Length: 460
Image (cartoon, rainbow, N blue to C red; front, side, top):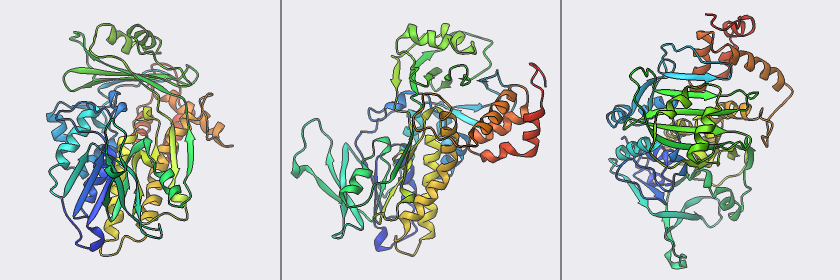
């Protein structure tokens, strides 16, 4: 890891939270600061298992193509390490059964190679690599309880921390940790808006789009099937069909992780019989057929903290110096679209670029520069997530405008073409994987195929 500076204002950086966003932020901060400290309330496991502080870790995750590119750039060779630990290479369009609303997508070779594994393995492997950095310290079992500022409360100068215990904390148990830069990567539980108000700053505008989607997830041992030729199953009902969905990923240890989801408070059950019945209700029978022959290995975990939420820090005219917000602490997405990990890695790269551009200068002006760049990056995944969620009748905070009905009709038509047109499929999944912008779906050849293509079943 390269260190760009010996400046007095690049001595120490603190990261609040050590999940994937925090670990990625710490990785790039090691390029620019002599010392980096992650303050993490949890304790990291010795093996890739789910930490108590990561309840969403029980559920299926898949790093998008854009995220894998960022991951490899931040941690060279890590995808090889993941594969050595059991992550399974996956050609998304060739190795998966994918049903989107109107039918199954034709299985064709693609350039979208992903790695199927548990979220716990991804975080564990990132942690293992990052711990090799000599200037990094991870303060486990501690939590940040507030910010330190200068006398005029204009510049953040560190954080107040305490050891996390089951007992009521004593005032003298608080410690002060000074820093030249503080990065809030504390996730959906961030306290930053409240802390800013305590310091006399206006809180950011908070935009929430909530489709009231819930998950239920379990691990299965696959049943015997010598003719099984897939590694993943992805099913998403259309809005007209009720917007139920599911994914099955083959993960390390020859196991299946199966996540069912339902929007509009149509939450999947967490008992085995109800779980299977929910799977049976899906419009494609493949997942239910697979589960009937499989053996349940774990309890079934539910999860309902899935709203899209964006704190618009980039819109504030005034923020304290030396404080940036990243990952879910800035913008969190409905997890069903699998964007969170990938976007957090891209945001870490943005932080690296912003700090590099200010090399040889003070950190003055870093905060608005970074938050505006972050906003530009999250705008696309936010649009993809909220435009879909906003169509659901039960969604609160729906973001619709005069053009929405026209866009709905076009996207419905495009989705109806997915089972019959490989060109549209590849273009659509490039957008979903964040490697192409949504505007690419309106290129002349895609528009022509979408609007005038025939939709007879079996047509190629």
